[in-house]
Length: 539
Ligand code: NDP
Ligand code: BG6
Image 1 (cartoon, rainbow, N blue to C red):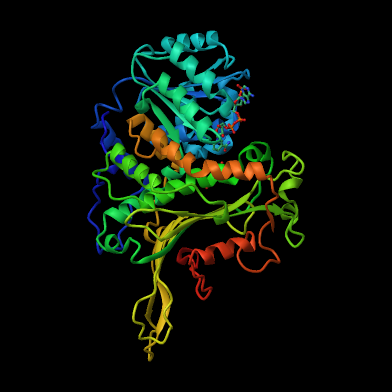
Image 2 (image 1 turned 90 degrees about the vertical axis):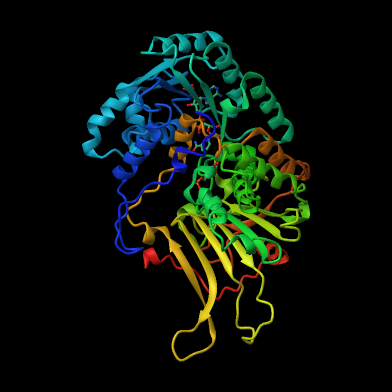
C-alpha cells in the first residue's frame, strides 16, 4: 500500500453544523462508514485480496483479552477487508467454540450483534502444534493454503507469545509459512532485556524479514492523545514558537497505576518498571514531545525525527534516578495492605523496582538545559498518564509575584484532555491575577465520539501497511542505549529500592517515594499545590 500518511490521516468531512461548538458529533456508524469509504479507495483494500490473521498463542492472556476482541471490533465495524479469516495457533487443544467462550467477556458484543458475531466466529479456525517443530508450521501453512484464496492471501502473523518463543517461531514462519501475498509479523514488547539482547533479536528478525514486514507494537503509540501530540504541535501556530529551551522550564511525563502486579509478578519481576513502561511507553511520548517537525507524515520521516532526538540523549545517570518498591499500606483497603513482596508470584526478597523517576537530557539546540522527567509506578494513588510542559516565569513581573508558571498538559488517560494552566484576571471588581485553565476535555467537547482502543488503530494500521505508529529497529536500539548502562548498574548493585506505601491512604504529599519529589524539584519543576484541574465532564 505504499507509504501514505494513514487511511485515518485523511480529513473526514463533517455535516454542516450550526455554531462552531454545539452541533452533534458523528455517530460511530457514520465514522465507520467514512473510514470504510476511505479504505475502499485504497487499492481495493476492502474487496480485493483475501487476508489471514494468524494468532500465535491463541490460548493466552493477550490473545483472549486484547487480540481477538480487537479483531472482532474491526470486523464488526466493517473495517477489515471483506475476505479476512482468523486462524489461531496453540499447543493447547482448542475449539472455536472454546475461543468464543473465553473471549466473550472481552468482546463487548451487544445482543443485536449476535448474528455478526456468529459470522465472525464462522471465519475462524485453529491449528494445534508445538512452537519448536517445523512440521507444525508446515501443517499451519497447508491449513492456510486450504482456505479460500489461501495460497495468494496476505498474511499477518501476530506473536502473542512469551518472548522466549520469538526466535523459533519467526524462523519457522520464514521457512514454512510465507504466503503468496504480503507477509507481516507483529511482535509484542519486551523486545529484549538490554541493548545486546535487543540487537540480537533485531539481527535475527532482520535476517528473516525486511524492516517493512516487522511491526513492533508499543501500544501507547496507538492512544488518541499520544497520536494527538504531533497534530497539536505541528498543526498549530501558537505552540511552535514557545516549544523550546527559552520558554519551557521542564517537561514531566507521568504513568501511574493504582494497582500492583497482582498475579503478573512473575513476568514483571523479570523486567521491572523501567523496562516495562519507562524505556518504551514514556520514552516514545518524550520523542513525540521533543522531536523536530518531520519533512512529512510519511512513517519513515516521522521515525527519522524520533531517532534524531534519541541520539541527543545520553545514558541515564544513576544519580538522576529514584527507584521504589511498594509495600503494604495498613491504612488502605485489603488489596492495598499487600506489598510487592507479598505477591506469591514474586520471588522472595526481590529488589525489582515498581516505581522509577529519572531525569533525561536532550542535548540539542532546542532543548539543551531542559530536564525531561520520566515517572512511572504501580500501586500509586490513581490511574493516570500525561505529558506536562511547565513554562518559565513571565519576565518583568508587574503583579507582585502572584503569577504562577503556565503549564500545558496533555492528559493521555483516563479522561483525555488538553488544558493550559494560565493566569487570568479574577472576575469581578478585582484586578489581580488568578489561576485558571483553557480546557479541551474530550468528554465535554466530543460527547458522542467513542475513541477506539489503541490496539484497534494499530492492528488496522498493520492491515493498511502503515508503520508510523510502530517502533523501527534503530529507534529501539537508541532506546536501549539510553537505559542499558543504568539497568546493568542497578542489577550489579542489587540494592533494595525505597519502600513506598501501596496507594495514598494515610500518606502525605505525592504518591511514591518522597525522594522522587526531591528529584522533580532538582529538575526545576515547581509544584505549587495551589490549583488542581478538575475534570469538567465529571462535575
Ligand atoms: P501467556 O503467558 O498467556 O502466553 C501466551 C501463550 O503462549 C500461552 O497461552 C501458551 O499457549 C504459550 N506459552 C506460554 N508459555 C509457553 C512456554 N514456556 N512454551 C511454549 N508455549 C508457551 O502470555 P500473554 O498472552 O500474557 O502475553 C503474550 C505476549 O504479549 C508477551 O510477549 C507479553 O509480554 C506481551 N504482552 C502481554 C500483555 C497482557 O496483557 N497479557 C500486555 C502487553 C504485552 P499454548 O501452550 O496453548 O501454545
Ligand atoms: C503494558 C505494561 O505495556 O502497559 C503493563 O506491561 C501496564 O504493566 C500496561 O499495566 C498499561 O497499559 P494501559 O494501556 O492500561 O495504560
